[in-house]
Structure formats: C-alpha cells, structure tokens
Image (cartoon, rainbow, N blue to C red; front, side, top):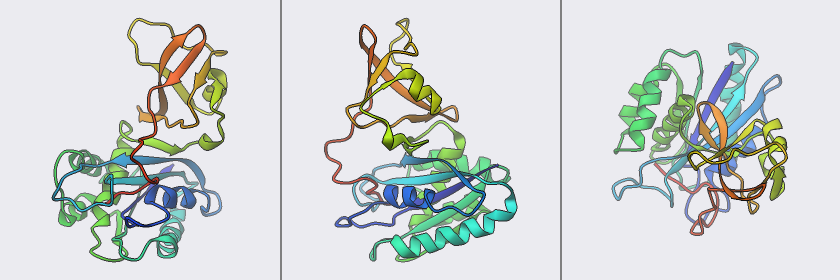
Amino acid sequence: MQAYVGFDDTDTLDADRGTGKLARWFGQALPPGCVLWGVVRQQLLVHPLIPYTSHNSSACVVVNIPHEGVLEELIAMAIGHIERYFIPGSDPGLCVATEKQPELGRVIDFGKACTRRIMTQDDARQAAGGMHLSGHGGTHDGIIGAVAAVGLTAGGWNGRFIEYHGLREIPPEVEVSSLMQRGIIPVPVEDDGPVPGPSDIVVSSGWLRPRLRGGSAVLPVVHQGSSVWACVDKKAKSSAKEGHHGR
C-alpha cells in the first residue's frame, strides 16, 4: 500500500535548505517496514496574491507501507521531522494519506485547482476531510500546498521526481538499460522518430529529473544522433537552491 506525505512552506528566502531537501531527508528516515518509492516536487500557481519564497512548489514523499497500522507512526515521525528542520519564519504544513482513503479523489481535484487558481486553507481542510492535515507554525498556510502535493502526486500525472531509486547517484551519461532497471523510462519527445535502445546513451549533464506520468517515472529525451539521447528538462538557472516555495 502507498502512503503520501505532503510537505509545504518549511523555508524562507535566506534559508540554507528548502522543502524539497526536507522531503528527501524524510525519505531517508522512515519507520521500520516502510520503503521509499519516490519524492515528487509539485509546481503550484505563481500569482502576485499568493505568498511564496521563489517558485511556489511543494513536495510529496511516496512511501510503500506494510499496513495501515503504521500510518500513525509515519505521521508522528513527519511532524517531528518538520519541527526539527523547518526554518523559523515559515508556515509549515503537513498532509498524510493512503491510496485507499475515500477523500483521495477530492484531494486530486484540489491539487489540480491549486495549479490554476488561488485556494484557501478552508478549501484545503474541506478537501482533506478525514486525512491527517496539520499546520506547524506561522500562518499555517503550508497546509494548502501540502494537500496539493498529495493530490497531484496521487493523481499520477503531475510533478517531477527529486528522488527515485538512487536518482542522484546516476552518472551524467548512462545507458538506457540502466535507467530501465531503476524504473525510469526514457521516452522520446519527437513523433514518428527512433526509440531509445537498451545500449543507447542518455546524457543528463548531471541533472536527471524524470516526470511523474501515468504513475511512472518518465524521462523525456531528444535524439542527438546515432545512439545518443539528451534529457529535455534542464535545471533552472534562476534557482538559487532546491525547494524554495510557498503557498
């Protein structure tokens, strides 16, 4: 069974870490019997009326859990994790759910709405229903992005992986077969073109971030000629550090 742990707004502009990093750290310290599936960054609406640090993104840690009985411990550990690592002056929020919760469809719709229009704390609470939802400082506005992170990730068609089966250990040039072994699927963006072969090389320039598509880690690539492919997505030059975001 999968559980979704959504974090948002744990940092400030001058922080040395962002919510993405905090989420990745949580994935390294899970309860016994729980296994990290991946950590997904979700991009929310950027709007002058929405307070955020720099990009308005949130993050969701996806965990394979042995049974629902471990959920209480997972929540307690997530709360403790926020209290340990959040930056004073931020407005942290936490949302935790499982794939079996009846509110999940409503939360998926809420997440999609957060990419298009301004949503409120009351909207987030109404969508979350019986899921765990809590604020841990400041205005508690982080609950909005936390619920959105869970919804968008559970929907399976939004977001970018910032951790997935040792993602950051992959060399800048890697064989397609090696990516496939990790569950990362290179997909060409060109129509009616060649398809990456197992021995073909994917060049990432040291920044490989698959997208969440159809519940899988999909890596858009473009053919560079012969047996070489390049990742389409590049690291944003304006990004001072990972995970800066807000509500």
